Image (tube, helix red, strand yellow):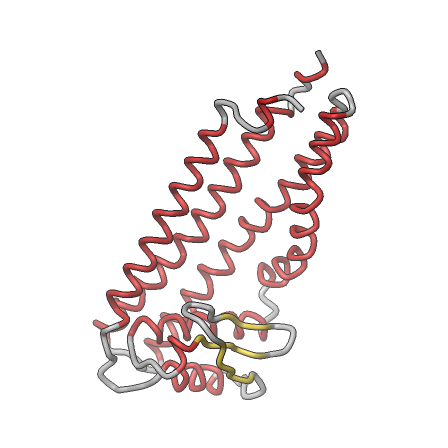
Length: 233
């Protein structure tokens, strides 16, 4: 197999993607840590805030559950379960409340049949399949005399990951916007605390932007390496 498949000048795209992702991850951790020690004045726990948001949105059927870990919070649309991590569940910090409200925002999206959320759910198995089959197809195309059809098909399947990342962006931004609006409307946080929660959610959103940029750079690298049919000689 040609050496360029493992290393070539376009590897810089992968390195750039890793650096961007690393910076975004570091930023969200530092921002979360900064406000993880800031207790909200009303003494609400993240669980109480989540329950209040869900109940006031007519989502009493959504179960609140606890899962191990830190920042493992997520909404399970298939089972109507909002899962809060150990670090979030009973925390009274502004950071934890922001995260919990964000996940409640996903539950509200689900209730309203928010199209980007539905589209993302549909794309999950498709993107996973595409990511799994893409490189075997590209490798097979290279091995079998530079079969451009197989190579292009592999690139196309890998591009589904980028599509998934792009669809994820409006889903996450919308959930954060809903969270901030509801926290304000229900007066669950003071104006100062609301601004702090907004900082946490904006930082978290950057990780999704970074993931989309990294996926784009990976697709670009594959196109530059294999998309032009240069390997037939």
